[in-house]
Length: 260
Image (tube, rainbow, N blue to C red; front, side, top):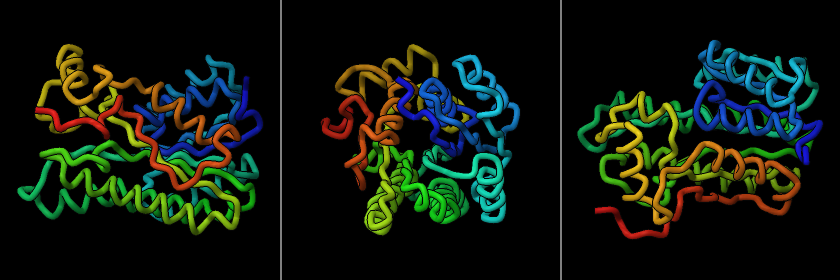
């Protein structure tokens, strides 16, 4: 069932990871897509995969944008409106993962909050008039680290806790306009982000499997599709009475004892 048929979605961070996986899943559901990111080659690959899943080329817009830059975000939203004339769904998936706590520099702190928090605020501000007009949906990609403290991930966890608070507050502010705002909180998901950051453990399949069993009661690392399907549910009318929710997609991490 193409239950996002004739909907228009903006997906940030769409060149890889959860953003890319969400785009491909949305393509199977009949949703027109504005794929936003800094890596144009990555966006082109994702667009090609969306076409392979049945989406027409004219239903896809590639937008090379740095979502930490307010003027670029405003231009990107204008480009989307010019092509599709509306915005129904916004998926804020752009983000970074950085290990560090009190030993981190102020530059690291600022960078993490700039990418993980300010960018979402900036995108939400730019799209608000359009999602209000369409009575649309905003879904923010947060993290299980906002729900459970993890040694070595203080700054990252703080940034995602801010995303959760922003999600709940925006849900209240936009509810009178019938706009729903939710977040998903993934656990360890097999994405390129772990290969780009200073993880304290190797990212081989074997090591990822060990970490999945260590942190998740369900005993495995999550897959991108696990998160994409949860996002699609929240974006659809199937989740039409849900707002202000932070939905863990973490194999039970948020209810488990600390890993030793």
